[in-house]
Length: 113
Image (tube, rainbow, N blue to C red; front, side, top):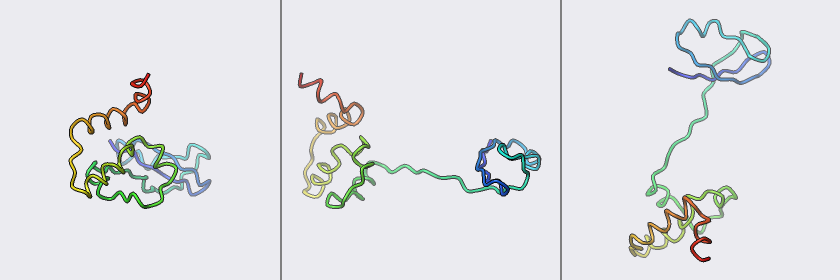
């Protein structure tokens, strides 16, 4: 069951609608102005990068945005990249601790209390 996005050409309102049958699209009206003149727009898309892809594309020397530092998936990325470049295996213990930090960053403080 596709959910389509539309833009009203009368008031520029963007909205989503679940369309079960092609005939339903003909009866579609804008929720803001009630107009019937609209076009289907391309929705924003998201894609998933594997951990390996994220690591290989990461440049530790590049300037990072604020959103990079607020994403817990990036904890330890620099250390992983450096180890990869040097051909060093950080071991299972490092990976486990890293995963725990990524899912619960506050756990590092709990351990040290």
